[in-house]
Length: 256
Image 1 (cartoon, rainbow, N blue to C red):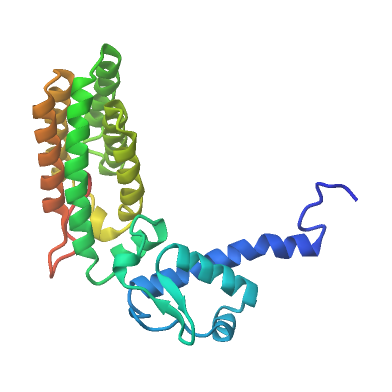
Image 2 (cartoon, rainbow, N blue to C red):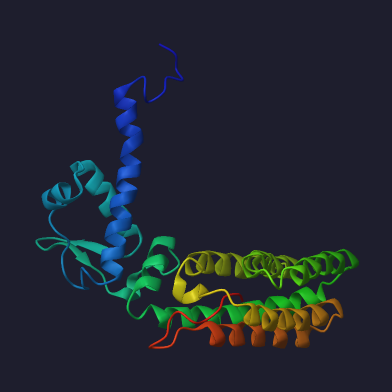
């Protein structure tokens, strides 16, 4: 029999291939239930046999899922008590599944506020580094990106896509790969939530472009302090404009 036999040709390989996908689905559902406090801190997850019935999976899949939850800091096994939900101080808040669930909580807006503060601080520092590292090639790249943005002001959806690219170029030019990785991992989950992204609005796009222009001008002139201040102000002001209020969560705009 060929060594490259597919899972479809061999049922046992097919089952083995399906198991990780099943475990991942169970993990994602349980992460959401734990983080959104359907299963509160200090309580025990349902017993293994009950989880098998709930999800229609084998004990092996449930055990793999429980191991994944433990690695994320969400649960701990206690003799005689079962699998116990850990205090949030033990959770890996940079884990993509946990982040996504945090932004969906009733108090998810506070985490988005925190994200905006983190972005303002880290991207402000990176804008300063980009200004210090500026080269003719970097000036050309940023100029081309600004020209793209200029043409898309009246097309919010297109502008937003190139807006992300503008920030990405600056972060890359800064050479600060760790800060970029932190922002990328957090924002990639937040941007999928309506509370963070909001509704597209041309007026806000125009204001955003003015802010981008200030950042751009400071960076290409090598003004590190000015670039940092402009980037911080841009991110903070953008979030204030699109942040949902207690009664109207559907009137704010996107970009940042």
